[in-house]
Length: 282
Ligand SMILES: [Zn+2]
Image 1 (cartoon, rainbow, N blue to C red):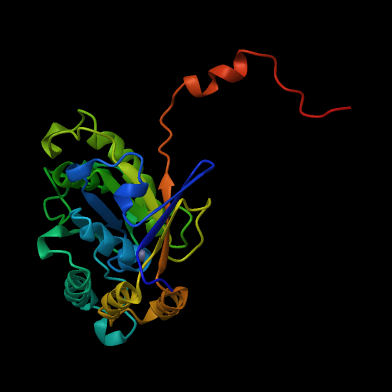
Image 2 (image 1 turned 45 degrees about the vertical axis):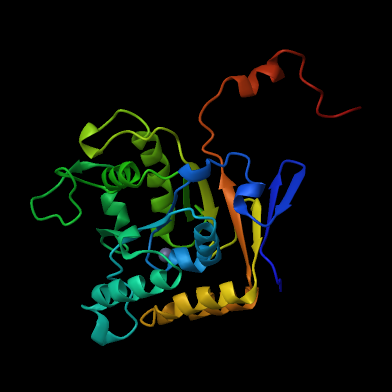
């Protein structure tokens, strides 16, 4: 599709095109950039963002991966019903090292697959809970801890509109955890972030809920590496159609800047300074 790398970003009525992410970004933090991809299941990040994960490292941005679930429900043959979690661990390290991630940038949170609804919020952990951090469990506890450890400038997560409930719950819990991580709450979970990281969405199974704001095009070799990475997940036969869609899409990816939209009264001020514009003309 393309012999060169191209980033095209839409900001309002402006279209920025360049050969680097830094060049088309308004709020680039230079050598402080650090990207965190949050993957509800181990394969989500490469499916939705495998090109971007490669290109970020090309611009010397450290890339981290946080995997929320243990993948224990993702078996497709009976023999793997009890062992698939361990199999997926090995597949994951092979997959993301193919994309250039160091092993110590891949972090498992270990929440039970398909049971995230049981782990919303934060509460004291049972003594045998493998997800316990500082004596507590829950997605907000773990996400706040890892955000403060990794200290990302930007976070990337599957869209809230995605089909899998684990994706939607992960999205909800990440947004409030970003707020926690940048504040003073729960000091035992680490030093508060110096900023609210920018949040971006990638699509895995469903369309974006609103149009994406960034398109990436790359030479074929980047798509080949993404497909090689996905192929490492040999146990995940159920994603065959999604893998085919990635191959058919070619060396191209879309991403969407997500506005956390913290309340700013000034957004509404102008509308109250003058009479409302009539909605219909007679
Ligand atoms: Zn998933």
